[in-house]
Length: 249
Ligand code: ADP
Ligand code: MG
Image (cartoon, rainbow, N blue to C red; front, side):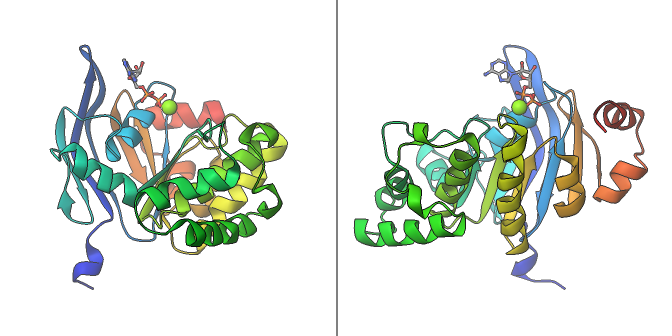
């Protein structure tokens, strides 16, 4: 098959990022096709967060190229990055909801500000999104009144409220108590099933095996290995991948 449908939603080529002489990304390539789920694993400090942050302009890469749906954005202006961030959602480990705003206001803020919806339509759309994650009854609560798992589900639908082309997740369940991890992974599983394009940094290997189309293993700022989950978990090609998996599995 060929044609515009083949253009990856996100493509990075030779990404380099340095912090004061320390090389956090050392020539990273990746590609995420429409509807694909790419899981990124690797030890602490291997550059996973830096990679995700570069992909939506929260960090400026020092080298390489980033294309979003075929459009190069690496050297884009701040205004262009704002447009990218409206199309590429982001979910962080710490939820990053605005604590002084209700759940409903958290959800409506970006769509109203971006001019997607007026307030009434944004509220209606947000109520529908809260229904999807079973939290309609929390619309008027503040984030501090919710459990971690509930806050993260709100953070996910907040990203969805912008109708993004892809969502980037940086360890979305790492701050959660064990009993709340499942409810967040279920929402993510559902999104994947519906065809959302996702890049997910996670240590949840069960999720990766089940949901990922491809898994990237990173170490010291490089992609050591990319493979289908079954291959990467069962027959890793590199010693470093094996060593990492034997520590966490
Ligand atoms: P991971 O998410 O895989 O744990 P990070 O991307 O957070 O790794 O970090 C990769 C490397 O870059 C680490 O050595 C980290 O200390 C460094 N780093 C990340 N962010 C910064 C920053 N803002 N300033 C300086 N060094 C940073
Ligand atoms: Mg990280």
